[in-house]
Length: 572
Figure 1 (tube, rainbow, N blue to C red):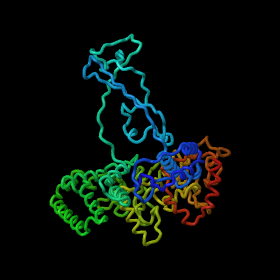
Figure 2 (cartoon, rainbow, N blue to C red):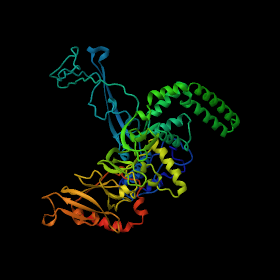
Figure 3 (tube, helix red, strand yellow):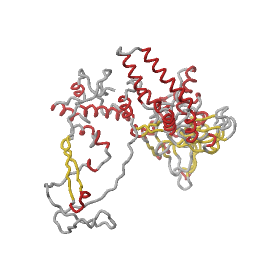
Figure 4 (tube, helix red, strand yellow):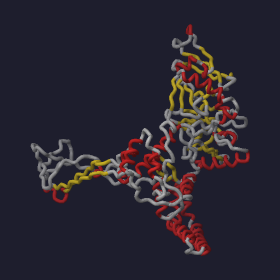
C-alpha cells in the first residue's frame, strides 16, 4: 500500500475542506496558519495516495460504524501532516556502594513537552511507545531535581516480610530527604500475534504478493480455517493451521518458509524488467516443485501421524443434541469452532451460526413441510436476544438470509455459504432464519419501524416476557405484572402481525374492575405500549441489512407497518 503522498497531492486543499467541522476545525485552522508538515518517509506505490478524506462530512451526516471510520481517517490524515510530538526523557543512575556491582539502579520518566499530532489523534502513546506495554522506563511522570554526586539516605520498608530491605543497606529514619528501594520481579513474555497490517508488512518485506493479491492471501487462510481474526485485527492461528505448518516443517520447511515463494516472485519481476526469459523461469519453478512434490509424497506418513494425534474423528466427539428430521437419529453437537451438528450414521454435517450460544429447546420440531428437524435456540448479543433455529433450514437455500437474484445463482451461492460455514466464517448477529420462515411467523407480534425486521416473542416465554428484534439489536421488555402471554392465530390485515392474549397476575392487573385477561394487537395497544420498556443494544450486534426479506418481499406494505408501529413506540 502507498504510505507516502505523491507530489501532486493537494494537502492544503484537503485541509481547507475540514476547517468548518466542529470536531477538529479549530485544530485545522491553526495548522494552516502555522503551516502543515510534509509527511516524511513511506513509499508511493503510484496507484493511489494513502487513504484520505475525499470531502467534509457533517457530524450528523454519518452514523454508527461509518461515522467512526470517517473520524479515524480524518484524524489520521491530520496527524500525518501535523508537527511531531515532543517528549522530554530523563534517566537518573544511582549506586548503593555497600551493594557493590549489584547496587546499580536507575530511575526513568518522561514528560510531554508538545503534544503535536497526538492532540488530534487523542492518544497519549503512539507507534513504538504504544507497544511497550508500560515498561518502567517509558512511564509518564515527573522526576525530582537531582545533582550529580548527591547522597540520599535509604529508608527501610515497613512492609512485613519484604525482601527488599537488606542488612547491607544503611538505614536513615530521620533524614529530611530520603529514598526507598523496591524490588520488582518480572518475566519475559512471548511476542504478540501478528495483526493484519503487520502480516502485510512482513509479506512486502519478503517480496511475497502484490497490492492486489495480498488481501486475497489473508482472506484465504481465514476461509480455510488456518487462522481466525480477533480483537485488534490480530490473526490467531487455529489448530488446523498450526498442525499443517508443523507437518510441512517436518517434511519440507521450504513449503512454508517465504524463501522459495519470494525467489519465484523475484524472478517474475525480472521477467517484467526484461532481465530473464519467461520459459526459463517457468521450467525452473516446475523442476523445483516437482522434486518437492515427490519428496512430500514419500514422507506423507509424518503428516498423517501429526493429524491423527491432534484431531479425533467427528463420531468420537460431541454429545447427542437434537434429532435429525430425516433419519430420526440424534445429531452430535460439536462446539467447534466452527459449531456444527454431525450425523454419524449418514456422515452429514450441519454448520451452525457463530457468534452466539446454541442451546437445546423443548423437543419441538420444525413446521416446514418435509423437514421435521428438532429445533435449537440461538442467543446472540448482550443482553442476549434469543431466536428459534432449525439446523436444516439454516443450511437450506430456500431459507437463506441472502436471496439469490435468480434460480441459477441460488445453488452456487448456497455452496459458497456452506464452504464459509464449514470453515468457521459464519458470524451471525441477528435472527438466523428469515422473517417469513414459519418458526418466525408464528411468533411475529409487531413490525419494527426502525429496521427491515420484525419483533417476535422471546421463545423462552415467561416469566420475563420480552419481544426481540430479528434484524436490529432491540429488546422490548413487557410489563412485569404479566403472568401469561399467548400468541393467537388471528393476524392484522395491514401488518400481518399476530394478536396476543395477555393474562395479568391476580391483584396486579391494570384493567378496570380487576379483570386479568386482555387481547390486543401490540403495535396499536396503548395499555401495553405505555407500560413497556425499550432497550437498544450495541450496533455491533445489529444486522447488516440482510435477511429482512420476508416482510417486504411478501408485499405487506412497509408504509402501513411504519404508520402503526412507529406511532405506538413514540408513546412509550
